[in-house]
Figure 1 (cartoon, rainbow, N blue to C red):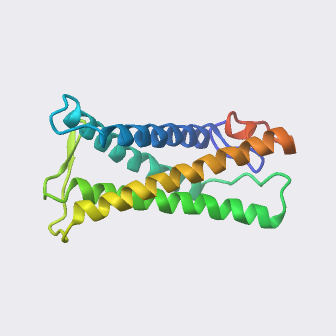
Figure 2 (cartoon, rainbow, N blue to C red; figure 1 turned 45 degrees about the vertical axis):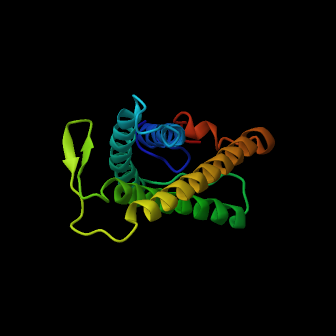
Length: 183
């Protein structure tokens, strides 16, 4: 079952969800590690290049995920009040917006000197023809605090899924792990 149904996520949505989650947490960890490196550290440039390349790849997956979500049926929420469902929906939208802000800020950090971003030595993402004063520093703060905020939202999201599984005893978490047959 590749497509979503009214009662379950399909394989494509599940893979996109977990691929993005693991990538975001991985990029966060790598980002925290990178900022502790000095210019003379042997992995300084390699970690930056890897972080940028994975980040650009994440953008492509993110855009595909948004398109897939827009074109797909969304499973109905299980067992929560309308208010809680609206709060969960708003939190998902907030995570998407925060991720978009992080990506734009990362791009602005990486291109502040006018050089393109090289992606896995396969292609380049061009820099904009303009820059603003202290672009890298300002974008760096937005990138860092946005990433911390996104990780906080992701932890709350995971706790909500665990609440559904262990307290509410519904299939909210299970249907994001494997496609379920329609009821």
